[in-house]
Image (cartoon, rainbow, N blue to C red):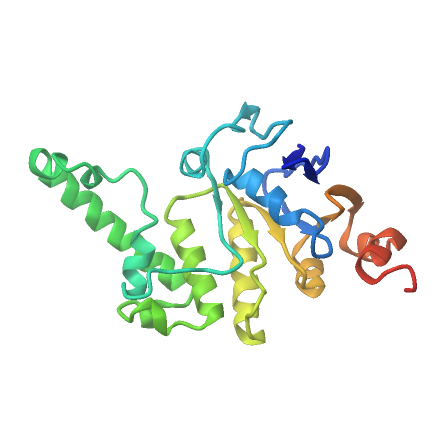
Length: 245
């Protein structure tokens, strides 16, 4: 894909493939184009050229909410939960295709609406248990730490049953104890067959989680391979640290 902004090329002829059941790392220095690439994949931006395909189907023109129907969901580097809603209510927001979202269905099909709401509530509790936030279910989301907010966002994403999860810097601003919890949950999700694309600066996390890493610089592919090979690549070292390294 390529993406231009007012004549400036931010992503230039950049390609990647995410295999089913893979954890793929996307790394690069600040300004490399990682976030733009991520936003293109998530649907927040549309490519100037090129395309995005999932199982052979072109989803390039689809909005983020449409991509969820194809099993693609994302988290954000800085989570912004609904601060005055409870943790549980924040997770429930992620439930998809609820009959009760349509006004007249609440009057015409109340039994179905109740059944779906009950099922969503049960699932939300399971997701909170999965991310270790059950004890905070009825607390307002504003009381959560940065790491807990990332876990909350992951629980909300999982309500949509995604098969591809785009994780945007899950380690940023997270204390070491909660970071271990996040990594453990990522491994568990991957064990269930979910494919994960991870943008991250924490190379320890990348090397522990990812079987393959792609490095970007100046909007282009710089290197690709195992975490050890990419981190030792002279071009990657120079991009991060400068020629003096």
